[in-house]
Image (cartoon, rainbow, N blue to C red; front, side, top):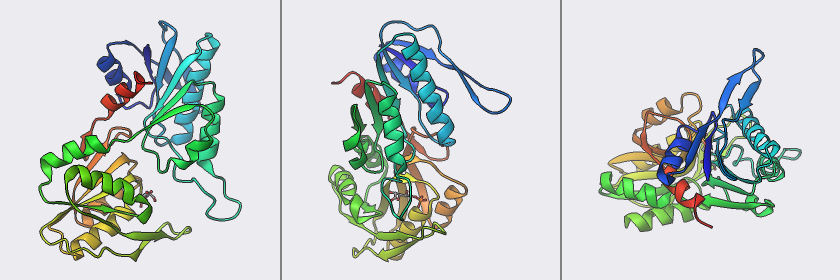
Length: 291
Ligand code: R5P
């Protein structure tokens, strides 16, 4: 297998290739004067390829570049192509909240399925349900064991908090691995202002506990801000945030710190350096060579 690293891979292509001791190539990329992306494949070796490209912001640009790379390989008559998309954009618009809205993740998944890839690998999307209509082979990586390993080294009295009742299963998995309790807050988001507010709080006493607020994505930081304030008002000695994807839009970091978050943990699916980075390239490498 040859691993090809796109312009939005955050170094993960090289790391995956190194772990698998396989051929590696960096895809040439530049911008035309009008801002359009130019993609050129390096000399390729063999018949099996993993194209690594995350789709963090600017998501549309990175998604189109991924489609260009896949097409360029297919133009070379290469058919065994796996798209490794560590952060899959638009995962959160997975239903029609208001009449007339586009269900963006369905469009993204259809574009990828139609691109001719043999397999899609991604790290914990917002929900797995939209993948049920994905016509190709796909693997969703759950980084929770890796997170538990790193967090257990640093957090001695953890208490896991989910930021939605629907995310309790994720929180329970982390809590089981860290041998601690868990609870959830229920939030609602104003679709116009994007502000989040609590619908229900946690019922547990967190005195002396280190609240670990676990989410799939941190975007504006509003959800973590809310959860941190609730955790601290319930007696938590400290509050840390952990998420698979640190999108960190705008002043998310400052917002979370002001709300009392003392540490942020997240994977390297999106580049963000002001946190404890948990490298998931090993999990991706293992997945690539698994069935
Ligand atoms: C939504 O339900 C997700 O799981 C996250 O809680 C949400 O996307 C985080 O967004 P933000 O950081 O903007 O509150």
